[in-house]
Length: 233
Ligand SMILES: Cc1cc2nc3c(=O)[nH]c(=O)nc-3n(C[C@H](O)[C@H](O)[C@H](O)COP(=O)(O)O)c2cc1C
Image (cartoon, rainbow, N blue to C red; front, side):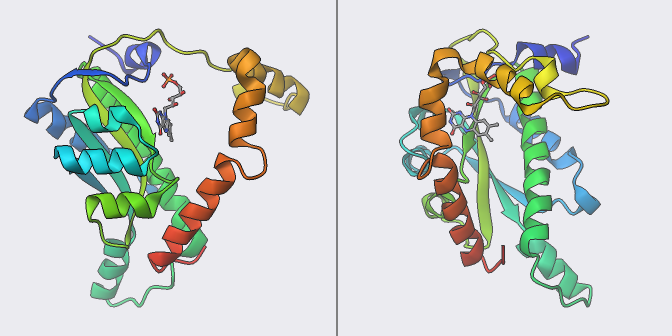
């Protein structure tokens, strides 16, 4: 009997796909997202299933021209859907406040867990998956998929039969990631981070963390799209 931990140990993102996703497997993958736990059991997300070639190509463009998005047989976009929750509140006779930062934090955690469950289900069924950042251009992805402004794309999953079997990629040593009792100094925890990237660390941090880098761009793009949805930050 295959165990979840075996799937986890084998995981490596797959960005080249050989074949389609069976209908019943797709149903199981989506069921994994549906069964995932969420804060207050609110399930504040809506997953867009994308198989149409042109739609996938538009999403691929919106996320910076990632070919594997266009090439994946199935692409799942995990969107925050607080609109249905607020509407449900009104139907139940409660005029809801703006969900604001609290709603954002909870919904993002929920989407992260649900997409993670879907990814594990897909890998357990023999598929290769790659998470795709949608939070860097959420409104662009909305346009690519014809989504309403109220549904904010966060993360995607490209799924297909693997056409490559990459080795599991490096991870930080346990001491940088967890522990009981006193927290090791940042210097020590940082060493484990640097181990993962080796000589590429400086270049990567320049792209991601330096002023004007990716992290700042995500912040402004997500804030803008979140506010266009009518939510405060
Ligand atoms: C939230 C999130 C966003 C990601 N965005 C992308 C992406 O846009 N494109 C991509 O090719 N991989 C993306 N990845 C995959 C990571 O690059 C990958 O998981 C990481 O490098 C570790 O490699 P591994 O999954 O093979 O172990 C993303 C992963 C996560 C969790």
